[in-house]
Image (cartoon, rainbow, N blue to C red; front, side, top):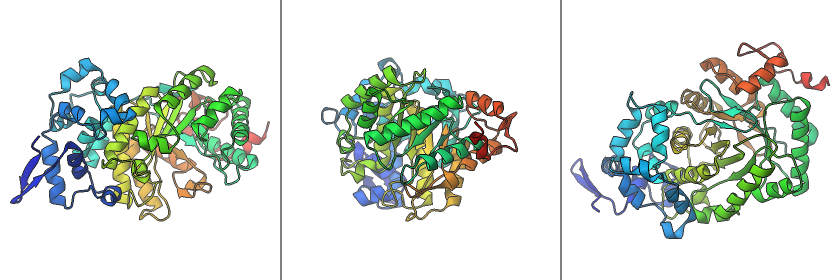
Length: 455
């Protein structure tokens, strides 16, 4: 296979599809750290010039981790709808990009084509898109899911209420939940990252959040983001679980470093379908992030964007209620500054939706990254314009347990007001019943958590 281009009097040649994909990627500090990034802007453009002429069939035949070595590769390839694939396998990546962006191409058409894609195809077309291209294409695609309420409807923006506490104090968590609910946060999930992920602690937090949901008849679901095996045991012992969570990576080796496998995830999915308390049918919650495989030394020389696309191909197997990329959390070793974080957020959102999963974003950064709260607000506005399903809701945008900066309760309220969006319809009706919202707008009662101390 000849992968060569001549640009500005210099010939650039790429030894494999994996190398070509890496060199075509936008500048990422993680790819630079791995020694696989383009050495110049000219080499990056040459790689994209060559990639635009590669067929989708070639990309399927050349996964970045071989089929016989990696179960993630096998899951993705075996899920391909062969009828759809036969229709598109002759398209070049450039033609695929033009089709996605064409005015005549609808979201329904894209959703159908997504059944014939592999992760390498999804990653490749993403590399040829500008930030605005990613927004335009993402905006077309709606992926709808249902657990105890509905995610992904046109005109809605949901929020995960994230009331983390450094000691898992029930009083502190409960106060943060009440404040978040009063701003309209929590329709995605009331999801706690536990400081103590022992079974007893996880079950205690599940019971507490379920009691709040039941007492106030809130159309949402709970989740405690412990390891999936702990949640499975909690389910076995009768704990009220709304969503089953797990972080995922894009290779089998990287997932093994997280303590998970496809067989284990299959078991968790089966148990969630059987024992989670909401009506469903979507019960799984996954989080991802560019750089996870590299941080585990399990990237096989592949770039972090392509490996991220592979996570979405794996997540799709479990028909999740929600997935989000924790875009700036891993740190500047993988996404150095606000330019890279914003780009990665737009890439991940697009790739998730193109894969066919309900995609949100934890628009965030760590304190040692070259980014600020203004940068994260910029990303949140861009993603909302792109049709992002949900963001995190953290008290004051400062997670005191995980020590990173994020979007706040009032950020989601502001984004809804700015772009004419509303909560999940079931959740909005509940807010109206409490006088917190009327005709899609927050009332004067909003933000007053004392409402929930009156019963």
